[in-house]
Length: 491
Image (cartoon, rainbow, N blue to C red; front, side, top):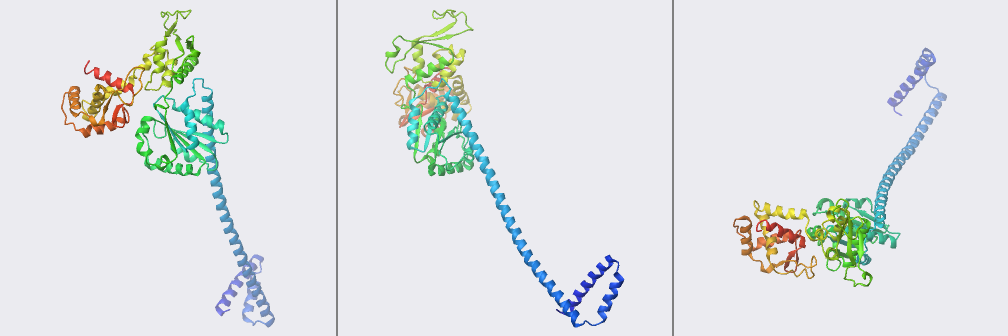
């Protein structure tokens, strides 16, 4: 120990002794003792005692340092343990939240399926069986159809049958792609039904947010425990062709079924059964033909439909005791069943049997286009007065209407006896379009063939369809709407 260190130590020790003496009331006595201690020399015995005390102090100090190091290590370990515990708690909270969301959506889907099971208007159709067979061999199914064609009910029937056959499988219905990340469970067998997630009426897809979700969905599908059903309208599917032909999820092991396709459209027996179910549900009487049980599969067994019309007491009916009913004869019934209304046969039956004002229209309601569709086409014609592009679209539809060629894509008789009209893409008459444009809008524009072909492609999403080089109306309702609109120009 150096002299400086010794003097410092002595000074600190003296200060400490004086502080204690002050508390004990003996400050003067010990101050004098300290002065005497400074003046007289230390004897050997006292020096040894001081040395012993000093060494003991150093030893105690080293022990304290060691204990502090141990305590420091313990505190660091406790800190790490707390961080790990916090992370585990956060993970458990996330799992609990995701689990609760999954269970909630499973419960909501189960409630929808139960409600569907109790629905007496549903009719089993061959398309559902085909979908189930497709899912046995495919991981992704796209179920499409026009509005009102029964996509929602049939998709619920698919889920019901899957759950009935495989109780261990979870079935979940989602209406947004973003919900998928909240319900995923890698080790659980799951069938996920996405309804209208790419848009209900028109395409709604965001590359920044939806694309990563599809990428994640594709990865989970490849793991093997998840199968997916996409339900969408045909118009939306048409607008999504670029996505459906490019993303990996739609490129491998996928099946398609269109409820309005030639193969899977409703048969006459299925349509008759749907009409009967809705009539029964809404207390509308069905009178069958005498030999209905021996009739061929393509013949209708209904003879008449009798509907009570309480608000029309002047309607007379030999089949009603109170003369307050409306009778739809077998010819009209057959026309209704053989029709292919644009808004969908099931939806037409639902509205026809529930709304008495619509019921009074009889087969006419199934035969003619909706007012909304008529207004849509008429608005296109009117907008064409100020917008040449819109006007040319209307003229293209009008040219197809006035073309007398029968559509190759309509081999059967639509609406029981009428044909679809079409044009050949390789035989488009530019001069005919120019003449019609002048007739509709009283002006000439420099039409080019490529302009007509380009707008035909745009119209394909909504109004037109094609088969190879033949372009024709998607549905007779569009054809009729254009005809009615044209009659205002040329009665």
